[in-house]
Length: 105
Length: 524
Image (cartoon, rainbow over all chains, first blue to last red; front, side, top):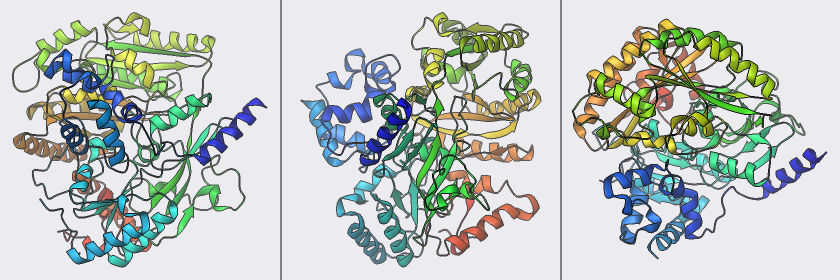
């Protein structure tokens, strides 16, 4: 019985909301789109590669203070080497601005 | 460079089309000019930048908008290239086969319409990613597991439609698909299976409905735009125990596959398990330059050093046991005893692995349906970031596995690439997926890769091996290998194409299927 109730409520909740909220903070954008490759930990592709190529002190994007906003936006939209571009339907211009603000604050 | 126009479409007509699309979806959801750049193939192979290049993209938010878009595309004669989330990166990403096409970007349609815990399924729109669905299950404490491919940011629907595979007992994603909603090129909307019956409540429970089963013709195809899809989800098992078995010699693959076949066919090996080659696994946690600074493929001495450093084998078999401990204990004893016959075989559970990152620790998560992006580490193996998959299918026999391994590894090494292969084990066949990692910034390397890939396709076909999936650049070549009885299958697909999409506006060239006016080399 519990399962049936849970199923029904879950279905209702799902049917009324998209998987992604339209308004996201820069931190939320980072956690949705970036953290899997650029977060901490020993499996994050971007973090590992930046550590190899730029040094450990430049491995984590959230700890960088040398990334110009225009550079971040260009890389997100055009990609860089292994990193593919992010399309504007999935990561909107407004979300990209919020992300940029978050990373450059 | 200016974005290309499709054959026979003037700049004025394209501008009119885009204006109509803006009226349908809102001007902020049509992306042209510089905004179209993010739809290019991130890992191109061709050195001709004008090929495989979209003119623009349009992103609808509803089925009704999709209907209006395809009607407008028909009216203006402009081709669309539908993508779910456009993350099919080893196979072209969001880029079209036909340059000048407009990407029909479905990623805004990202609702999880239903998750049913009692029966174990979800009904999703194209924009729902594995991360989205996983987060939803976690947030609602639903006791269901996903089956994920390696990159978790891709579309649940898109991966199934492209015949993607994962790592749990639900690893054949299209097998687990149940019920679709499709917008046809005419703008009509069709629901398949039980969904065709008004008031029916088994759309996601029974695949076949009544009459011909049609869902398959919308996979790897250009016959319609899928807007909803049911996907079966695995009930959380009572227990879970991942393991890894390593093998020391290249030629062991023959014996390993012979041992594995009856175990898989009888469900002793329960999941869609994989056997992966040394370099592919090493590339998850290291780079080539850490071990070798020479050119060409790594020599055997380096391979042995990597094996010793990372405590992995020339082949590494990751599997998992699912169910109550008495059952998994019994299954493990059978599996262990069977593979112990291979000289040098080593057996591991996660607690045996101390190095980080580690392939079994990583795979233990994917084999329980946790979406990740860890696999992208292998793109950095040689620098340059490009990759493509060559994916022929063979019977699950030792003879075929060894033959394929020697054919493919020999060729890729001859062309200067390291062999990075995996064998994804189905019930009766194996996908031999060889990832070729290349420097996408190096035109000469791209040319060599193209030459190598065309040879691989040709040589595999000569031995009766066909690819199950491919990059946009090789769709014609591979469709051409499925040519029995004077190309009877392709002719039938073309007949269906002409009937459902007479103006050929949906994904021209997808899987080698071209509309009538673009056949016989008339694509440019």
